[in-house]
Length: 374
Image (cartoon, rainbow, N blue to C red; front, side, top):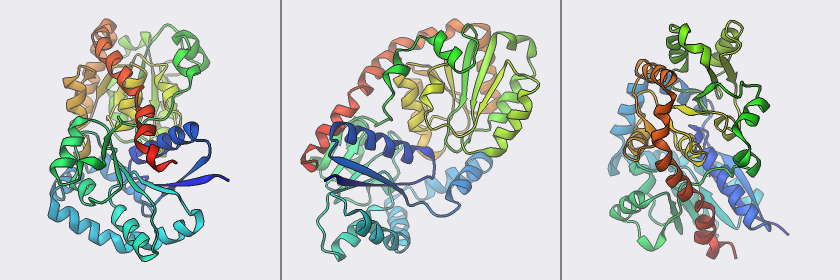
């Protein structure tokens, strides 16, 4: 009889969902007697609202993130959200009777703990941090989880400093979805042919956010102002759930059939990243680490959202790619890369180093979870 792990996630940004899927894969492949149920507890229209504010009201989004990034405001948010979440937790416990509960979202732990206490249930509660460097106080308000899976030493120091027992902290690395060996080992030219791409052209991957944020349209239109440079390049554009962007670029592809290759929501993003020479986008944790796992340089774009500031610094400091903060700056960097593709070679040593570190994450996750998987 299979045992169920309940993973509470959110569709407000792609990082929560991606980390949930990654953990489900890691656990069930290592422990086939377990099955994982991923449940989204984000509010109705939450995904649409997130995408809208991320794209068009970035400053408001960032100001709100900063305003609530302190213990008092974060605690207030937790208290306001508890009455909304508890009614959704109780049916899940009855439906799945989970052996373990894992949360990849910061605001659900109080609600889960209160519900377990009311039902007199003793189920291990585990938090997975999905923002590796810019850590909002909301992540550390609940201090009684049985285990906290953390991506790095920096997050360990932050959680310990904010009063969480270090014995409950485990540094595992950031979990990403398992990339099939067929993708990892495939020759680049044959992989591009499989996707209908020219095997010899410089290939740029643009986008990657599950919500399609980052004003990709402005970057594309900026590039099209330099048509003489675009004959030697092809651009994969991942539009995510942004249907209006996908429709716009599909129409534009009719005029530039050998240049633009737009995709809508594409769950196995690593298959597209594999074909690229460089990845351009907002470095959410999933896109950033899947890019590193495939040893591709990253070019950031757009003003970083609050939780992404540390990701920009990480890419720059560790020499994993280039950092820009607006579509105009990004367009200039892309044009420079098109003129001199060898600029990308300098990032390979650091990428290969961090790729090796990422490969240890599944083993470390299972090792940390082992006491709860017996």
